[in-house]
Length: 146
Image (cartoon, rainbow, N blue to C red):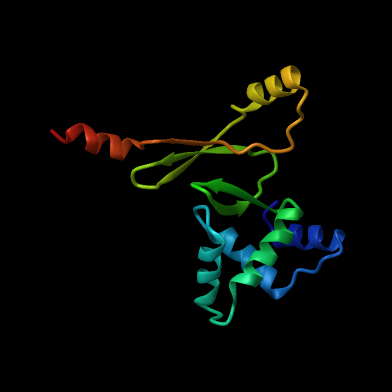
């Protein structure tokens, strides 16, 4: 659900309006090619609207996340946001050396979640997976060092 009409409809159905501030946050996430922290979102908005503040960013993200329009993933103890894509789970590979993050799409967590439900009676509502390690570029650099 990434169109403005979908966001407007979801907000309206839940009793919210698509305010100018929420629109700015929504548009910033729609245009992003990577996961963004609240601070990064606010900084990008401030390029056009210098008086936009971080508290407004967090309030907008809270509403958008509550309505499952936006997803937060904790990476390295910090929250990063992206648009929530229906039916498109993905997981994150985080390079501990350079900090790059790669998204891996697929239903790889299905067997794990099935195991959790079957063996532990726990029904997961969401799952985030962040795998730490070293990316191919950093590994190649490490291999070249004598």
